[in-house]
Image 1 (cartoon, rainbow, N blue to C red):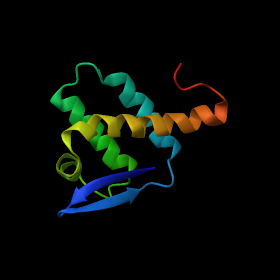
Image 2 (cartoon, helix red, strand yellow):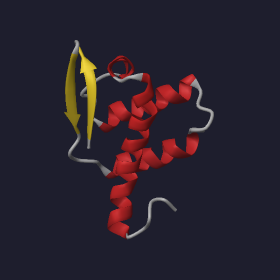
Image 3 (cartoon, helix red, strand yellow):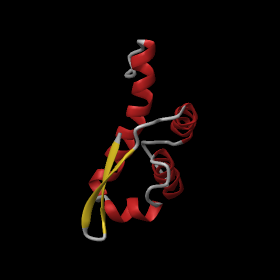
Image 4 (cartoon, one colour):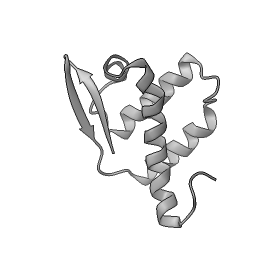
Length: 98
């Protein structure tokens, strides 16, 4: 899994090769708590903090807010969640769309 952020005026790629079982649990927990159709600022902070945690604190919340364009933020969060949950679906043979 990777994320590209603008840091100090340069695009930087961060990679997370290992997704722990704990992060799967956090993904499920956060996905249930956040209303993606009517997200509050606090919920958005929770989601961004989750992304920071997912990438093992290689960057900060501010790096995400300052390093992604506004139209890339939600798709990036969604992609990261889908990748974590998708790995489990692939192993279990479950269709993650359902």
